[in-house]
Image 1 (cartoon, rainbow, N blue to C red):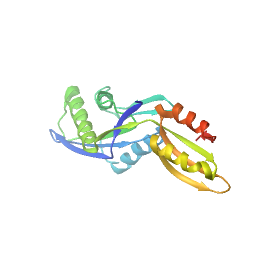
Image 2 (spheres, rainbow, N blue to C red):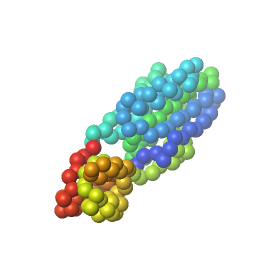
Image 3 (cartoon, rainbow, N blue to C red):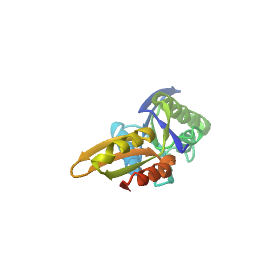
Image 4 (cartoon, rainbow, N blue to C red):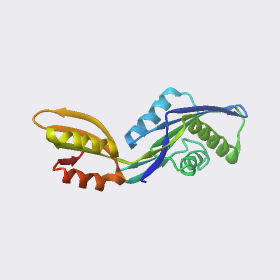
Length: 197
């Protein structure tokens, strides 16, 4: 099955290490634009923080998009450890931002890496991880007489999102990517016209 792991919802976590406060936020995204909007939102939420360290990983058009930034922390000490959590847990369509308020004691490279990684892990665990199936959206145009057969077929393999009734019946549905060919063959055999959304 063509499936992927992502977050069930949004997650937050707060940890303190030697007086420094690390606040981690994790959320689903499905585009670079939405990931950047989330990062900007967290920066706006914590304008007085010493650092807002972002990382994301998502698939877009079948390509993997990756990003992380140390936001002023020593190179490789923060953004990369946060990103490595996404990689280690094999998550996609996820953005994480870890905000740090400096507590007066330097943590060193290893201490920083551990603190950022732990904060990210806790936010992700609080969000929960789910496995989702890759889907394709179809728009199917059929006759009234064939529409019941089409509904049964679509409900067997996927889900119907909407229906529009005029001189024909237009059904918008979502089906698992791996069932695409089988569903198309059955639709053609039923005499339907359809297009990918």
